[in-house]
Image (cartoon, rainbow, N blue to C red):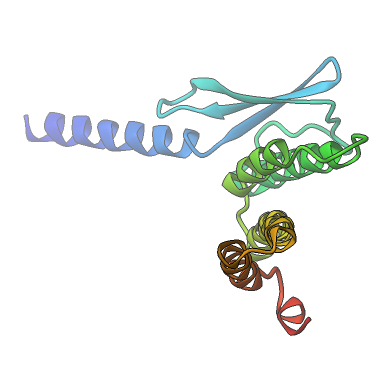
Length: 168
């Protein structure tokens, strides 16, 4: 009975270990001008759909298994590129759309450099909006609007992407 319980416990531990290992695996499948990304589930071999990246092609041979550090940079770059695409549209940029893509990219930023890149871009957009609001408030030329402009300028001065911007 003791050996049977020990064997059963060992089997359960092995199953838990294999399932945990599978839950950190990613699988990429090229599909008609897109990449499908699947993520392993907490089970020995099962996987679930994670996301699709439209218009993305792998520039290397497809591997059987990917890690988080392989997949997240691809997803980060995808969302960053989508944000950049919105900047190329004629007329005023869609700041809300750009910010939406940047927030999505931030979810997949796993290195300090990528986190700072997104933070810098978000701060730049917010700074532009605040500077515009301050400019409009100054043009109203009233005491209240000048106070509002000063508040906007103070907020904008705190939104820097890097230390050199602080000196400007």
